[in-house]
Figure 1 (cartoon, rainbow, N blue to C red):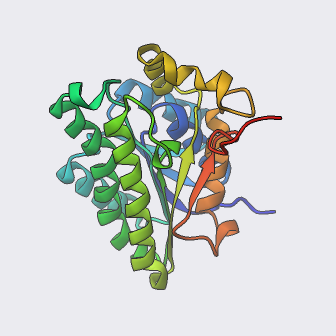
Figure 2: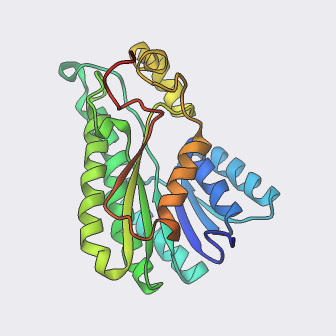
Length: 257
């Protein structure tokens, strides 16, 4: 079977660690040339080094995904360097503080919305025209099980991820006739640096691993990446406007007999 992304050009945000790094490595192993973005220059360089150690092709840029000017310039750069864009993963995100809504600072709320939701809007706004020029393609946005639930203390995060799901469905509707599929993944508790940091400030969130996940463990970034890469590939050619939950059963509900 040929690689899923042979000779394809793919953009990934949040590529400096966690799920974004795993997606980037997985794409290269499937034959893609990747353009990687992150605000963490050190993490981004580490991802690129891992890719190049496997003789993969990667281009990196440090940027703020909530900045329209920086996103626009990045997508223009991809067009100039690679001449096309076949797929994009809008994956960058932050959790924000764990506080009840009456104690949640407005500036923190706005920052979470900017990084998690505005960045997805901006990404798709500038990715879509370049993907159209390539004759079609695919976009996968990273939502969360918080797009389905209401985790206490995470009002900004949950609001942003519900918004990602809504944006995904609208843009899927708008672009299906242009041969562009738009989907989202909803990871559950995943063993990434961001989740570990959030668990330290929100013990109740961390306790979900033992109490609310039927699989009795957190997910690995590579497991989330595998689902995201499948969703972006031609193997999922008739799937659009969908949010794929990858959570070890966390959102099943109910109880074990």
